[in-house]
Length: 445
Length: 184
Ligand code: SF4
Image 1 (cartoon, rainbow over the protein chains, first blue to last red):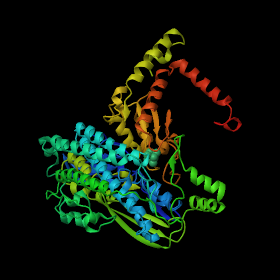
Image 2: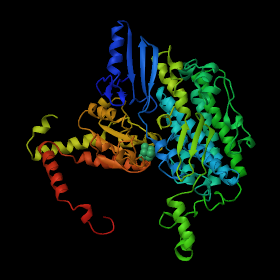
Image 3: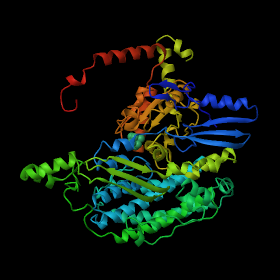
Image 4: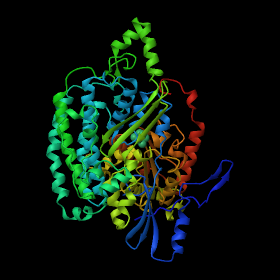
């Protein structure tokens, strides 16, 4: 285990005109170490991260250990704080999707959908969003659930030393990324779901490729069972580790696979359906082991259930528009790929540049300034692969959000780390983090 | 570093240079430095389909002391900046830095209070790799360009000479504002 001592000298705090200012860059480190040393026993304090191969990103863990036992564990977060929430206040409502998609970058489509559902509710147009757009949203979200769980399993495996699991996970994730690329043009960070619908319709041949993808994934998923589920070493590392029971989950606000591993089948897709999830046929897997192994099994099963939903989405796709008809909200043109490889819409250009001055003005206003959203606030939540992803959007009636706040499940679930890790072995801390599957982009935003 | 630094300019030094460049380029050890979204493209580049092992660099080192390449993959926050610098300082010479993604290169779309506007404020950067995120193929291209740079890098007095020439070239180069034509 590498320890990274923190860089700055300990500073207890500076007196300023606004009161005492404490530096939180880790200047506390020497103090913690010396106070632990004073206690004159076997206890030592170990700093893990923020740059450490098995902390799942830039997470800093401060562990007090007595021999091999962790007596106290704390998280240091904020190493990836990007100011995304604040920045959305300075961009139009449509540009917001480009920013929120980069919060939890493994669940981009969930961030986009949650944000767009909130904006649509504020606009009062949630009934006008075309069916095709909603079905494609569900389809993309379920594919995203699979790719996110694959990364959870892959990186979790790698952190346990099972590199094969990682290679397999990334192999299947690549297949899904190919589908994203076909549909949105990008492998990650899509900004494809927009307030009012989608940026584009599905390209030709997408449905066939998606069907093929579902077939391939159906074939590949059992390999994880063969590789890991019954593997005695894997089980020995995971079973009865990272224990958190229902009471603990409830007290800490934990959701997602961790909550379902206690036996409670809580899933917002069933409990509080959105995007028409009540009309899809799928099960919510649970286990009652409350441990890391149970969460692993739940993730595997959820991927299979997601494939079922993707199948149903593909059957339901009907031709039609993918954006609301309201010209005050919908982007003025549907772009097509030109011979130069760039998106363009020759008909639309002909109209605004050649025939109609009004459409030029309208185009200009909508693209540069954006649409206005009536004042009000709303909270919308969706079930992301990690748990309840909530968005609180406040509008003051302008062309930009007044406030956009995300309740990211990684952030809330991460506070259960101490409850799961304390009293266990040092090596199990890795398993704890892997079973929570936090994404630091979502935690810090 | 060693004896080669004190060699006089000439046949011997350029032979050592070629040998050292060739050996160094063939086994670059990257440190894991995944920060944000770009880190996943970095991992994808290391995994099965793109397979960085073909270029002799699949072994990502957990410890900076065993690494000589830092791929800064993602946005660098103000809080992470001192940590990043410290890890860079812990890496032994010679060392190289690839700034992966627009965030690391220039702050990218996050022109705000939280993000360092380009990792070159903290550490010297050898290759800037644009994209948000850059595809694994782009990362491999950057790595191959870096290999070329490593292979042709100079030692000792030749290195000093090269640095002087580079400075001179930069001083006499035509400023962007005076460039003419379409791609200025
Ligand atoms: S450049 Fe793009 S993909 Fe890379 S870290 Fe920044 S936002 Fe993420």
